[in-house]
Every structure is written in structure tokens, then in C-alpha cells.
Length: 423
Image 1 (cartoon, rainbow, N blue to C red):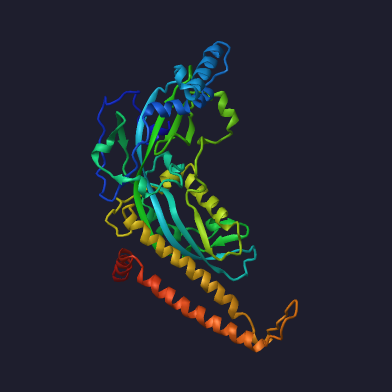
Image 2 (cartoon, rainbow, N blue to C red):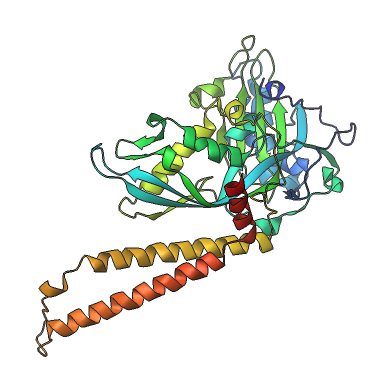
């Protein structure tokens, strides 16, 4: 079973009836408070839970239809007083996660021709989401783009009891910094994004990486259909008003599949509800801009890598995570804003470099001026002189911008770079 393999055992629906150990979280770890109690989560997913646990058996048809109707009314017309379907087990859970801000460069090809020269690919990852614990929840996104550092608070033990429920806190055992360093060891074939897009992992260079550890609130609900059928686990995001949740069928050799599973093929995590998420990694390719679909293609490739069935085991670190690493930062305004400002300067640099590169290809001796309608005879030499003046001014602007960005490089990143030179 999903949770048994992960070492997580769900308790019967009961509040404050048992004690849970709390990992020794570092002071950099922040948490998002639970936005609503478990009853709200249960009501929110009730109609779906009642639908997917149906057996469509003549002997249970009437009871199942009544449960489905009651769950629907309980959600949409709560004043009437109907009760929703109840889970067999309920657990409030703090799942560890990482928010990543990074700028990376690599040699890339945007052509199927292996003889074409590579281009320097520059990518920004801002507000990207990486899992923090190697249970199967690592394979799904649990935080959308609307959540920022403003929604978090420093973790304190008092947060393990909210809305009358004791919260199970999982430890961090996935190290994003280790994953980034391991990216350079990928085989060349593994970095083929598609037929026209690939990159060389050995050329990967990170110009800056900030990793923010956070705890994401979720409710894990388990439903048990009548008879020897697969159990159903529902994972509900609990950081804002009820929205996205996931359906997971817990299959077992000694249990039969539910009829609802025939509608979902082999998908084992089915996203339901509404979410503002587009991509958990949100890559922004700032250079080159010749392929508009490249960010989406890169996102799909990264998502497939993390959401693979074997991903949790592959991602789990074999060494303790060094939270004192200077690249691990607390997710606060004081830490995030300087990083984002530095990254914005990087976008400005790429734009100006591209403009200068384009201008430098112009042969000023071959400039011809066409005016329509004709107004005056413009001297091409004056146009060339103006172009050269513009080129010089942009070059000076580029130099000052490079100096500004170098001066605004976070001190902790400089310290980390210096430590790598001396090691």
C-alpha cells in the first residue's frame, strides 16, 4: 500500500488521541498554516469520494446513490443538514517541500542536426517546487503559484496541533542541492528533451541557487469500499480555501479494482478541483528566444523525471541534509527579494546583449535609407554615425549593468563560491 511502503500509517479518524514525534527542524524551515479543519476537506471531496468508491452492484446501488446524493447536497447546500461520506482514516500532514530560485546555463541544441553548433541556454527557475521527502507524494505538486513567502511562518512545535487535529510532520530527506549537482552526471541520451531540443549535462553551470525549505499542509483521507476492493486515498491541499486534491487508488494483489478505475487508465494520481498551477518548475528560458515552445517542453521533461513511479526512491538522499549550507535560505522577503532583483538584472543583461549582437551584424557601409513618402534626403553616413553612437551607448549601458549585477550578488552566494575555490 502507498502509505505502508512510505512508512506512514494512517490513524482512524480521531482527534488528539495519540502523540506524534516532531522532526528536529532547522530554524530556516517555515510552515504554511492549515487554512481549514478536516471536516471541510472531507465535505469538499465528498461527492468525488462517493462516486469513485461505488461498486455498481444491485445489492448496494440504492445505498450508494443515497450516499452520492447526500454528499453532493452536503457540499453545495450545507444548510439542509445532509452528511457527506466519511473516510475510514484521516491524517493531517506537514509534507516537506523546497522552493527553488536559480539561474542556470548549459550548451543546448535546437535542431535535429548533430553537426549544428550549440547555443548557450540560460534558464531561470523562480518559485519552482521540488519535493522534500521521498514518499509517493513526492511525485505530485502540492503548492500552486499563488503561495508565496507571505503565507508562511517560522515552524514552532505549537503548529503540530491546528483546528483540533494533531499533525504528522515528515522529515526532509530529499536534498535539492544534491539533485542539481547530480544533473551533471546524466548521460547525454537522457538529456534529449525532444527530437529538436537537447542539452549537454556536463556543461551545466549554476550562476545562483537559493533553496527554501517549507512545510506544506495536506489532509490525507482514506476510504474503504464495501467488500474486497481497492482502497481510495484522497490528498487534499490545505494551505488556502479548498481547491485541488488528488485521487489515488491503492491497489493490492488480493483486492479487486473498483469500477471507477476503468475510467482513469493507468493514472495513479488523478488531480481534481481547481488550482492556479501551470508547472511546478516554471522554467523561463531567457536566452535564446528562437524556440517559443522550449519552456513548455523543458517543463514536461522535468515533470516526467520527477513524477515517474521510481522517482521517490531515486530522489531520496543517502546523506543527511546540511541545512547550514549557505545556499539553503529562509523563505522570507528579506531573502527572496534580493535574489529576484538579481535575476531580473540577468534578464536585462540578456536583452541588451541580444540587441548589441543584432546591431553588430549590420554593415554600416551598406546602409540604404528609404523614405515613404519622400520628405528629405537623409544622408546614409549620418544614419551610420547615429547607429554607431547607439551601439556605443548600449555597450556602456551593458558594462554598467554588469557592474550593478556583480555588486548586487548576494553575499552568501559569494561566500559559497569562495568556499568551493578553497576546497
